[in-house]
Image (cartoon, rainbow, N blue to C red; front, side, top):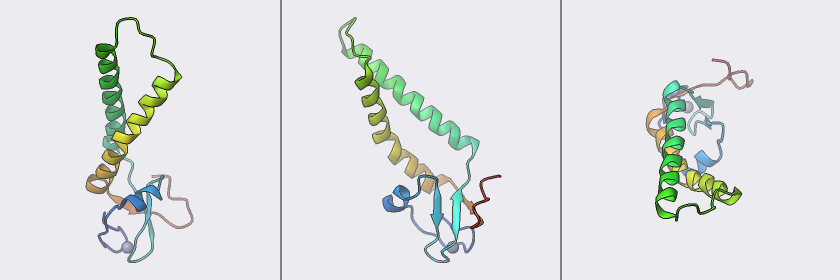
Length: 114
Ligand SMILES: [Zn+2]
């Protein structure tokens, strides 16, 4: 990741990723706040990866279970969601670090409007 204030490059570590659920990061060099731009490509990636993963798991479930088995309960969907998180969080972090660009945020917190 490159700081938009001072052009300092720093890695998106797991710690940093976990501490910024809203994709806001503080530069370790100039200590100014920045955030990832929300792009259409990113939104599409998130939607497509969830849909693809769910389709894969639904497909496997249909193939592996005997016909008519009753599995579509609450725990099934909870498990599906957890499996999704396990696979998609690392993908999301990778995408954040490699492809998303940081943009400046003014410290007053009014930076959410593009
Ligand atoms: Zn900086």
